[in-house]
Amino acid sequence: MSSPTWVASWMGVVKPRDNPVVLDWGTRFKIAIGSAKGLAHIHEKYDGTFEHGNIKASNIFLNSKQYGCCLGNPTPLNFKMSRYHPPEVSSNKMLSQKSDIYSFGVFLIELVSGRSPTLSTGRFKSYVDWARYFYREEWAFLIYDIRFWNIFKEKEMRGKKQMFDMLQIAMSCVRDIPTMRPNMNIVVEMIYKSMAEPPLIFFKKYAKWID
Image (cartoon, rainbow, N blue to C red; front, side, top):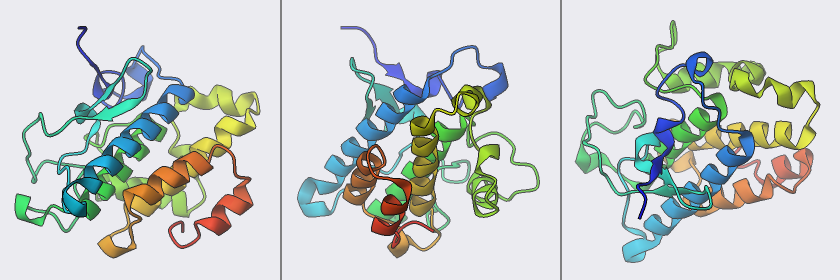
């Protein structure tokens, strides 16, 4: 059996400009779907009392069909250094399904931007603050992976819509207040609906979660 391909080996470990390997948007979208379904399944274990605790690109691999799969905790946790954990988490005792959802939102930002959470964010306090600023100022194009500019040049509307919807979903997951984050079943539903729903209908349907 061949060894798995880790998502972190293809993206997020280097600056987008320097990475010679480009994961196309279709593959990244499948990674988002597969890993979301995997995390939703984990959250349903033991009557909904189980969390993963360490969601990040280096813990997600691609299966034979190029869908993302979550692996349980193969890398050590370092809460002081982690860029994936939410503000409320500083130890194992504080992990929850809502903190998993925040971490998954960070991972979605990484898929959209091709930028690692470990890279410097300049004047911004955190990776999430960096993304949140440009999103709220309606400058989302400054978050997108620059290697996707062909999507915009070719006016590929489906890809453009999916990228923006994915960013909206990510922003709903990284809300500072845990109770305002959607559960993973809702996240999975939103990702699937983003493939088919017109923008206005999608927004109205999930307005509770999307800013």
